[in-house]
Image (cartoon, rainbow, N blue to C red; front, side, top):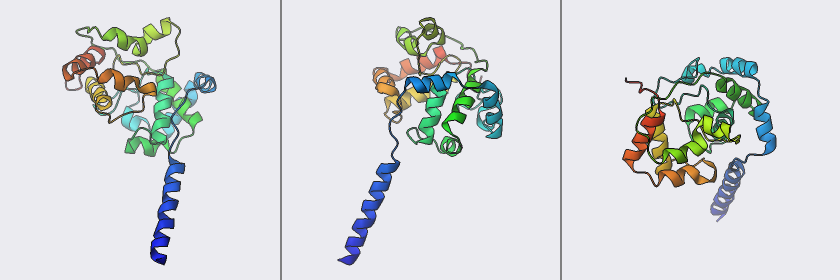
Length: 210
């Protein structure tokens, strides 16, 4: 009886610890937007070197691995949110968690600002599907900035094709769910595999194998 009671107390304690450690969903506030806007490029460059970001993302932020995204020229707001999500394990990746747990949110902002300042690789383009207009409303840099909208969706142009395809499939299969308001899950569930591949080709840069 005493043994059972001890186990019950132990499991109750573990459950409380797990609940306490569970991260709250990310929420944007004007204060957070202002903090990202105040990020310092030079400081971010120093921090990226100190924490060896180039080990995976290369010095120019352009990936040569289909499992690692190109982050050069990416929106600082998007990168900052992803880094926070990795640190809080809202988005799962063992290597990114190990890297992010060492960083403060201020350091994440500076690093995001540094990579956002780098030149993004061009997209190859291809068949333009009807759904592209919907995608561009959140993802295309020129469209969003022309309308003076504050967005947190990633810029797709110039990303590795296979990485784009894998990401869309992850949202479609509910293997990834850290998008705000479930937008990506809603959109990808309406796409078939061929359309996902076509979209990845339209927005992506030249395949690494090519």
